[in-house]
Amino acid sequence: MADYIKFVDVTKCDGCRACMVACKNWNDLPAQPEEFTGSIQSHNTLTANTWNVITYDEQVTANGNFEWLFRHKSCHHCGEAFCEKACPETAISHTKFGSVVVDADKCVGCGYCVNNCQFGVIQLATYVDDKGKEYRKAQKCDLCTGRLEEGLRPACVTSCHTNCLVYDEKEKVLAEAEKRLAKIKERFPNANIYNPPGIKGTTTVYLLADKPTVYGLPEDPKVALSQIVWKDYAQPLGKMMLGATTMAVIGAAISTAINKGKGEHEGGQDHE
Amino acid sequence: MSNEKTPKTIKRFNKGFIVAHWVNAIAFFTLYISALPMYTEFFDWLYVVFGGPAGARLVHRIAAVAFMLPLFIMIIFDFKGFKNWMKNIFSWKKHDLMFFPQFLREFFGLKAKVPKQDFFNAGEKINSWLMIVTTLMLISSGLVMWFPAFFPSAVLWWAYPIHNIGLGLAVAVAVGHIYMSLVTARPSMRGITKGDVTEEYAKDHHGRWYDELQEEKQQRKQA
Image (cartoon, rainbow over all chains, first blue to last red; front, side, top):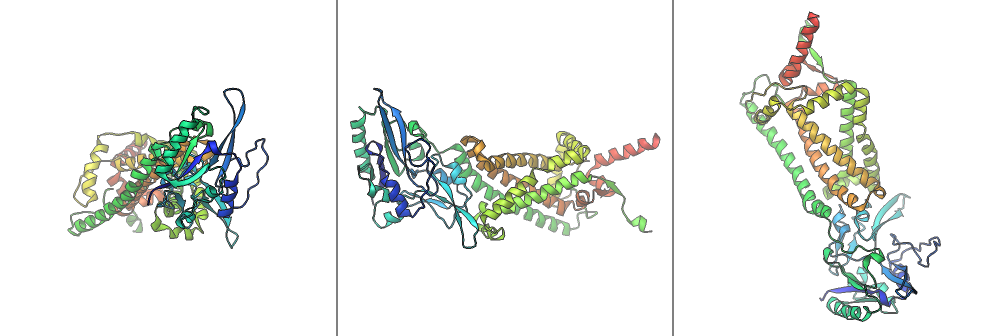
């Protein structure tokens, strides 16, 4: 099976928000009305129940005109996902589709992933169980993995009427993205394809009309040293050390018992 | 007659020191147990004991506050004991360094000649240092994780591995400490519960401290 990716060409977006509605509809997420804050953007940012938002960044063009920069903001599905590395319950994983998904049964709502996501995507949702007790689960876009398994495209993609959202073979999409980039360079000199190599690429690739920072995205995200120290060294070492300490104590106890049996110790009281 | 059989005892720790020690111990144990199901899946059943992950988190935070108290308890209620502890752990002499090779022999049940030790022996001094370092690691990173909104993301990202590493080290230190107190130096338990130890124990395990006490006694007699 060829690799497939979701591709977002923000220069084709007209801000209709059909993708937002389709996402809410397919994933059965509750509406989250927000106060009017002076922007035409519907929601301030992603939440646990709003998995994609079209951001409206207002900009003055070179010749003094006004324009909006739209972006379908959603989970990037990082090749090296911070949320996955941060999760102490191994509740977050990659699927064969390259999507990063949360296993709700394993998630305990600790929020480690929320604090470790570089894009501010994953959030905690609060639910109430039958007994009225509150509990939390991490939630975010799962690239409609359930639909992918049935051979369908993500809900947002099917709803996009400008072909800004595409789900197709990676090679093909990226080749077309390069062509499109060359075409729009004149109008958007800072345009770029956002598929950060520092996190081994993403399964949602963007064609941005301006620098990543204009959209509030990190310019060159990398797997942080803290993550490597934690996941690749501290955790396995820590578990080993607990084992080693236990073994040392048991070994010392046995050794002491054997030697004591020989009656070499006088007084019966040790020095510590 | 019965008087002869009761061993003579020496005052070792004040109430403030003892309370600080046990608040620290109980808080540490509670923190450990309430974090264990998150550390490894093997202990997931502990979530049920705490009434779910939310319950474990609440217990962990209450114990976290208790974990920050011992230093203040010690300073307020037993400043003399605190000063003595500080003075001891900063003092490293030949008899402290000589302690370790002999201790290792003894630890595995071989014959050993341990040099006379201070109020805190070299092992206890090392234990104190490891405890101070791991406690600082755990408290500082724990506060960052508890109040993430107040810290930049780079600090926040480091807090998680530091908390994790601090835990691993602290558990190793605690296991060693508990093993030593229960198995190799049982009479010391009386010191950290009732506050006094037998004269024999003081002489055997903290010779230099015992000698100091005897000297003071002599001086008082002469004066």
